[in-house]
Image (cartoon, rainbow, N blue to C red):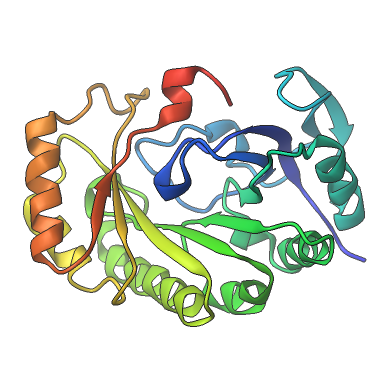
Length: 253
């Protein structure tokens, strides 16, 4: 049985996307190969974390340190302990969970075997791993990156977008409830949203998420600008919603 690195395991509310405010147990895999200017989980970008922060009891927001690397069975024991009767699903998030490869697949499979609903939050950077894990997930939230996000060098952006769209199609065609999320900045262009939304797979809704200010991003986009972006998305043929980061407003993890 393989091992992997996990940054956090805790119970909270989903703060983003179409399932906002649903209670979940979060398994935050460590490691991310992108460098988004708005990243709010920078401490988990490094893959090798010596300790995993595990919540002491559901919703306590108090944590103990557990030694890494962990086995899928160890992760599952913590998930079962933190799951509550109102828990909607188990969120496999990051960092970037697809980077965990076989370890991610084992964790997702274990959750599925326990009859838990599995919610994958991913930047869609590896369709090979997505192809292996998709049979074990019920929901997929794929975070599409824009050139303005500075996640990769501009010359690499189109290749990243293609891979994200492959992951989106894999999930949608497998019957997984799938949506894509796009973080919007004050600098996000209407033309960029139009271009990206025009290639989103048919029937997959789009969530526009106004950025929460971070160290690199100092201000939110105006709502007038967000409305223009939403109109452009709709004209490109997608169903669109505007959803901010609710967990930031509630000051929860």
